Amino acid sequence: MSLSRPDRDAALSPGLCQSAEGAAGAVRGRADAEAADLPRDAPSAGIADGTGPVLIGQAAHPLPPMPQGALDILAPMHLVLDATGHVSHAGPTMQKLRPDVPMAGQRFLELFELSRPRAVDSMAALLASAGIKLHLRLRDAPRTALKAVLAPLLPDEAGRAGAVVTFSFGISILDGIQTYTLHSGDFAPTDLTIEMLYLIEAKTLAMEASRTLNLRLQGAKIAAEEQAFTDTLTGLKNRRALDHVLARLIRTGQDFSLMHLDLDWFKQVNDGHGHAAGDYVLQHVARLMLDETRAGDTVARIGGDEFVLLFHNLTKRSRIEEIAARLLARLEQPVTFEGAVCRISCSMGTTLSSAYDAPRADQMLADADAALYASKHSGRGRHSFHVPPPG
Amino acid sequence: MMHGLINRSLQCFLRDTYGAALWGDVVAAADLPVAEFEAMLTYEDALTFRVLDAAEARLAKSRATLLEDLGTYLVSHPHNEGLRRLLRFAGVGYEDFLHSLDELPDRTRLAVSDLDLPQMELRQLSGNRYRITCSAHPPGFAHVLVGILRAMADDYGALVMLDHAGHHQQEEVIEVTLVESAFAEGRAFDLGARAG
Image (cartoon, rainbow over all chains, first blue to last red; front, side, top):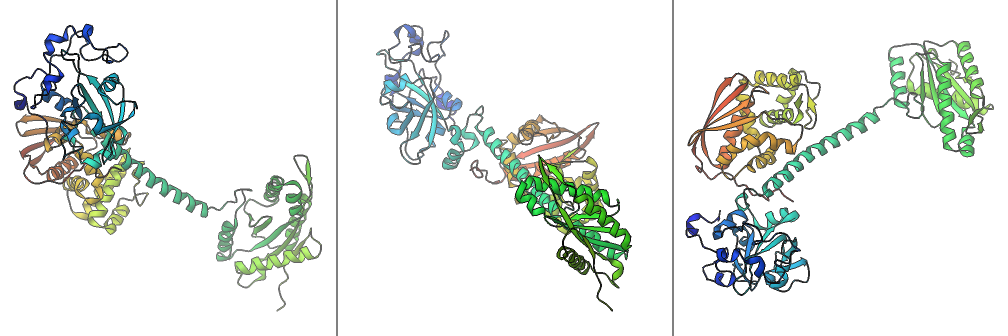
């Protein structure tokens, strides 16, 4: 900590800018004496032209002179300029920006380059920018960007005024902290910089935690989708669900029949009336198949226009023929979608679990598929049973 | 409801200190519906206490010891460097840190708006003696705080004596004696270390 101690400023020096070199005399003299008549005597250099904010000396009750150490405590990032535009004193934190070269004695505009306002090349122009936000950079590396505000000091007898400039890193605080290894003691206790750094870190941590959670939830969502059993378009079971049910039926030794159903002329619906019509037809077909089967049966969509129906505890051929005939009759009724009449049919092939000594899922699916293709080859729009090989 | 951050801290403490197998045992013994707590969700209070019960039984430690170890872990384990840093923002010295406890719940809410820490109050009894009173919700919080205070003393290089002085109605009381504030070197705290 390099804050000024009161004992260093034991004698309340009359001027802010009084320095050991005695340069202060040029800056301002007896403040008390002058304060009262300042407004009338104010020079024209923009100090008291009435356009800026309330300036020092214009207040109804001017501040009493402060000891030099006061500003070091209140605004450790400040510079005091004399009337010639030279630094007469640097606040302790300000000096930390250039630890090897004293700022005092250097010309302010040679230390800093102003980017806003731009055309500032003299002390007079600097004084004219009193009260507005200054954007500036140190001219040599590291060329840290800073914000600043300037307030003129009381002018001397010759009407020449110095100024106090206070600085902050503004939004570049993170760079500033890293570049200059500053500590909390380098900021005034009322300065919110430390709180801001705290908030940045705290929010970063909280954000990381949220991000981790989001990533895990996203992973879980993908896993859930992979484990889903429903075909999202039709609401029927999907291939994965079919495999589960089929495996369970075989495992528990239940009788059932497996029907493979493939739509005929569906490609013509898609090509002729568009995919929206195709989707509509698929949904219509799905409803119809649910209507024509019992609640305990399984209806799954396993491909674009391919379906598998499992009739639980049913292996009676005549009964299955009836169901197939009804399905066919209803499927062949035209469906109207947005004025377009869509006509389809279907081919079916069925195999019975009772036809096997030890039924296997892949075998039964392949046999039903073969029966389906037999239906296709014999003219479509019909149903066939799988014919087990003799013996 | 208990904030997930608290449950997650407890989980990480048990796992980092005693291993994944112990955490697995605790999950089973506490009959948790999840294998891991999420920091940014909330959970039924009862789950936290089931975890504590299970961990105490497995480790044959008292609730007070377990919670104090948790507090120490929160500050001193390398996994929690972020939290240690947030606490160090409180001030330049250990005394500053003690005085910042009053505003710890507010600071916490700035970071995580739905994480409510018990209100803490510091009273200076004499030059170097302090009494911290904190609400007993959740119960045992003061034991965690003792662990934090002890670890932060090491962090600042301060020499302190801490005493959990027991319950008083709905409050728990900790007595702190700051023997020496600059007893050891302490750990460095560079404001910009994590920034950017």
